Image (cartoon, rainbow, N blue to C red; front, side, top):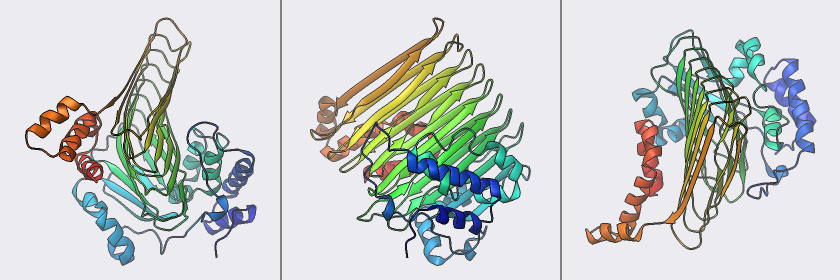
Length: 430
């Protein structure tokens, strides 16, 4: 029987996870805030019935590092997604989540690196966990950060010590497999001074006739002279509301890069952010959104310049077809003290028919006279001359359009690991 969200539900959830009292306190505070807060006043309409959502679905069995200990149905699902093959061929470690919990974790990285599920990290590294949890993304920021903090389960916890450079990417894969499920993973990544990390995230769900909810939170801390690259391809089914808050804070000379692909979901609201706190720090975001029938993808990025001589770059590629809506929404703020800083924003959109839609909603603030901020936006349809040229060479119109789209997102594909670029090509062709 489905349990409705309540104070008692959260108390039982925390008790079931054997959490310390301070975590239960935060969960209950966040739940009270969730009840008070309204849906965002901007962006797409969120017509969720919270009474229909399943808020927690326990994994079968304990977390394991051996696929032979995983139920055949779950193992086959992740095998068909290519996750098992990727782990063997090019990843340094993986965390896989099915429904509400991480069920599989394995890594070959150095012992002094922490890479585990967030639930496991709370038990094994409580002081480190408490230092960073709910620090960068506060539970009372919006209705869905409150809901995540009240109900979080699963996600990845990564700690890269000073000077350690991880030579192979780490990956997490999140799967919603049940009708009406809510998934609320919490990911925390700490990259200490002079360290380096590349992290990959994948997301999928099968299609149902009713809505599911994915409301994740990601908090990333990038130290001095450190680098972090976070790559995502989400291919949620078109009944999933994908409402995510992702944020990084970057210290002196540090670099944060978001590579963000949005192919699926019914509604996406996601704006990966960089707080450029340190002097000479850098933030980059390159994203694509491909919206088709019944989809509203409202995505973009936020860059907040606090340190001097900081740099940010946002590249947003949007594609709309079959009545879909792909919008860019972003904020770039060069503050008064962020002197001699530079920000560039480039938003390009292709609309493939007469019934699709794309809008740009930028908020650009420049508060000193030694910095520069540039914003360029273009909206176009498929170039008829190029289309005619390709079809005159014997290509079908669909194949010609496919080639032009692949060229349009070439900048994005170049930033992806090879295997993910291949997967992106497959998804776009579908």
